[in-house]
Length: 201
Image (cartoon, rainbow, N blue to C red):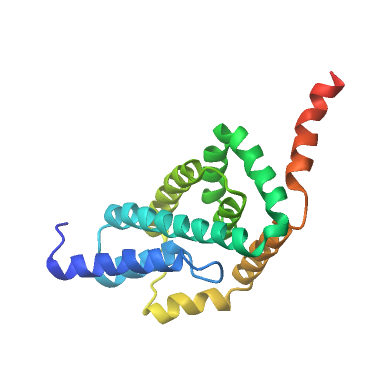
């Protein structure tokens, strides 16, 4: 299918909206729901939506991570040592970060907390970005292709987020996970957990 001028504007509107909702820390609809709306409403091509949507999502989450890092530096100065220690630990095991992000992105769990946490602890974002981009590309293609539910308006897309108790519960859980990030000594616990087998050997 060849994109005509009107379709190009619709396509850019879809990507712009996906980018914006991925900037928001919580309680936004899933990106694939927006892409489904534009695909069914305007007949935009699946692969163009899934690829462009994945890139737009990843860029939005990247900005969210950067903003979270700046927030932590200015408002969580008392926790900088713990956050930096966790970031150092994750960077030491960065070969697992991309794969873990990919698998997490394929799950139904919200990804806002993942990028907020990554930004706050100062983890190398290229690994997180790459894993998320790959995972979102797969997820977008799957859900946009599979979903038959038609959203008749963008208002309906956003309203769905607040009518779904499972969705609200997951988003609330993601916020709690961010709060626990700087309340608990995760780096110390992780190092102790990984060092235990070596100590017992």
